[in-house]
Length: 131
Image (cartoon, rainbow, N blue to C red; front, side, top):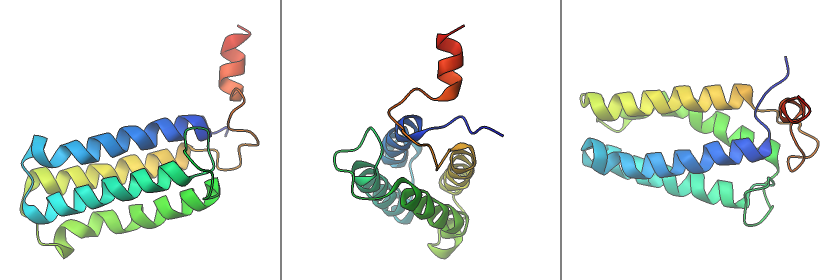
């Protein structure tokens, strides 16, 4: 199966995730532990995104596959953090992080981590451009 998310699209998802995770604590009224986790994740996602070797980064220091490996590691830890950090009894915070786990898994599964040139049109876009 051709994976529809190339480096450029993955970057768009990453920066949207940063904004969403940073806005969630105030918008959803998270407890302190969940708030700290959200702000820490947003900062970490932003740093990783700014340094990843894909079109929307500031410096291309982290290989795209390395970025993917980091996301898999974060995604594997996310569903356990509400219990480990003691805010699992807050449904908004708990469910936000469980949803973030799902978004992370779907984005990782649909990303073409071997895209030869993330700046080039993705094959699906070429098909659309040539009608």
